[in-house]
Amino acid sequence: MSMSNDLFPTLRITEIFYSIQGESRTLGLPTVFVRLTGCPLRCQYCDTAYAFSGGELLSLDAIVAQVAGYAPRHVCVTGGEPLAQPNCLPLLTRLCDAGYQVSLETSGALDVSVVDARVSRVVDLKTPDSLEVGRNRYENMAVLTGHDQVKFVICSRADYDWARFKLDEYDLAGQVGEVLFSPSHGQLEPRQLAEWIVEDNLPVRFQMQLHKYLWNDEPGH
Ligand SMILES: C[S@@+](CC[C@H](N)C(=O)[O-])C[C@H]1O[C@@H](n2cnc3c(N)ncnc32)[C@H](O)[C@@H]1O
Ligand SMILES: Nc1nc2[nH]cc(C(=O)O)c2c(=O)[nH]1
Ligand code: SF4
Ligand SMILES: [Mg+2]
Image 1 (spheres, rainbow, N blue to C red):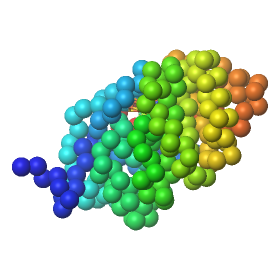
Image 2 (image 1 turned 90 degrees about the vertical axis):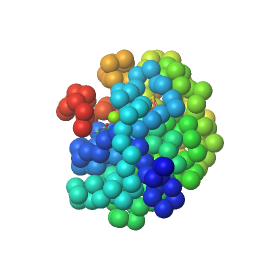
Image 3 (image 1 turned 90 degrees about the horizontal axis):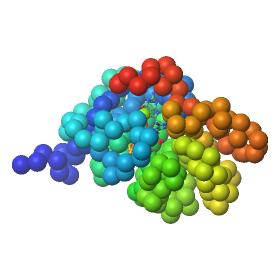
Image 4 (image 1 turned 135 degrees about the horizontal axis):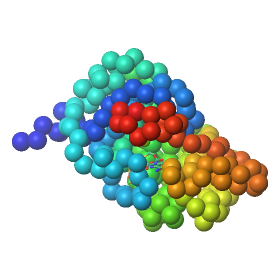
């Protein structure tokens, strides 16, 4: 018999660790990461394919207790695709109730309107060269506020031009708190992306994954 029901909610978890936030507007801040197992997408660049399967079923109580053990100020819930597990929603609420600044890294393939409003939603709009552009749920764009963030992971000049178009189409710079343009690691020269952004005077924040430079791709960071 499964122990996962309304009385004993569980989540399948790949890892929980304390590190330096390497992405988004809290870049550089000590943060606990809760990585949920499983993802319905297959972005060609994915650096977290080890989270597609496996993991360990943990109760929400056990997850919250493990997070509390680090006494963090910031918690980032990620994956895999965290919203693919419905119990991600009560986890986010419990983390907010505990007083942490909570962010959610999501592909935006699922409905983000149901996420606790205290959470900063970091929605990655998938570009054509991610090979998952068809999964974008554009209805999500209308529910984002100044507390939220939109990210583009850019693989090529074609992706850059596409991202510029979406920036304009959804007036993202005016609507969300942060628009991030990040090079796909190992695929697009960071300097090239930086030069395009300056040339076009874009109202976006250029960002590289800081943890790749600190720890390469070692697990637990
Ligand atoms: C591993 S995903 C997990 C959350 C969610 N599935 C998503 O895609 O947003 C976290 C972030 O890492 C980014 N990412 C994954 N592989 C990357 C790479 N090779 N270069 C740059 N960013 C990458 C994703 O695009 C996403 O914004
Ligand atoms: N240090 C560090 N920062 C991160 N920010 C977002 C991450 C993610 O995998 O979603 C991540 C990660 O995997 N490591
Ligand atoms: S949605 Fe996120 S976790 Fe899933 S394949 Fe894409 S980058 Fe990886
Ligand atoms: Mg990562």
